[in-house]
Image (cartoon, rainbow, N blue to C red; front, top):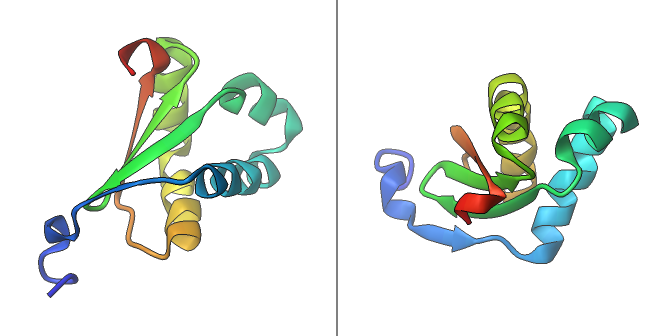
Length: 96
């Protein structure tokens, strides 16, 4: 039933370990310079159905991450969370 109706999987708050695991894998994928510039301070917060929510430093950084790296984040998060991740929404921390 989950594969047919992925929106029925509900919301899941990520643990600190899951958040840090996604960050570590992304750091390895994008390299230290890009990670420090874009991903420093990011928090991967919750999974709602197949949509992952994250909070970044500011609006510009959030937009850059979402536009350039959401596909990679979705793949990494799916591996860590052992759940399907189709969409990554990155918001500035001020909206937290």
